Length: 96
Image (tube, rainbow, N blue to C red; front, side, top):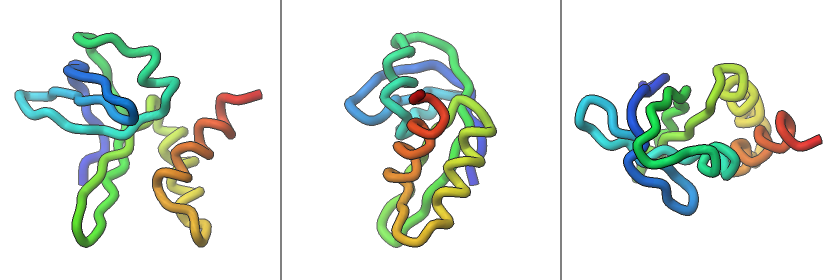
């Protein structure tokens, strides 16, 4: 399982960043706030949750280990998937 990636922002999309580490580009779903703070070429390190489904592997990224832990706690709630848990984590920790 991937737990942390340190690399360079290669691209920024509507919902993800492409983070290049050791020549491999990882597409990581991150919050809008994190995307807004990034510039292509920035060096960053992000904590990762690797979410496996039967037909996909998705990476969810967080700027701190604490944010990832909140996300994981929210994922234990019935009916809360990774996209919802990521949005809730952002609102719980960053919106007054």
